[in-house]
Image (cartoon, rainbow, N blue to C red; front, side, top):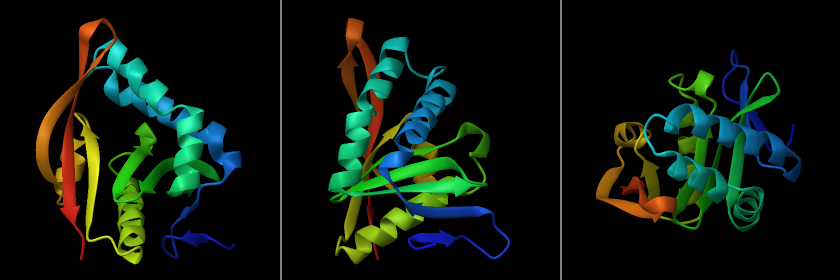
Length: 165
């Protein structure tokens, strides 16, 4: 298929550019991942903020303005990520597929895209649960910061960056 590439000869995982017809599946993936990975770490107000931040309009705008991709396994979307300028956003992997290299595949593709666009530095905001993942990919923590959400609850996260080769 044009724009789609198998990850290896024996793999049933492929990566391709996001299509608008992927919106419902990507939104469901994001909400399911937030529910599974953030609920024990963040207050409910912060969890709802994350879901609202990744609403349909923002997903579609990111895909239009940047480079959004999806990772598929057996025809099902199991991961997504977007490159917007020099920032990587909206990287999510289905909870049942985490720890199997899917996130690394997404990040490698987004970093390759950034390099092809002439970027030498990439940045991202890392949630508390995802920080160790980005640490392992050689992202450097610039600062820990927070955002006030409803009822004065805090959403803590990290600003990170990586020099690209």
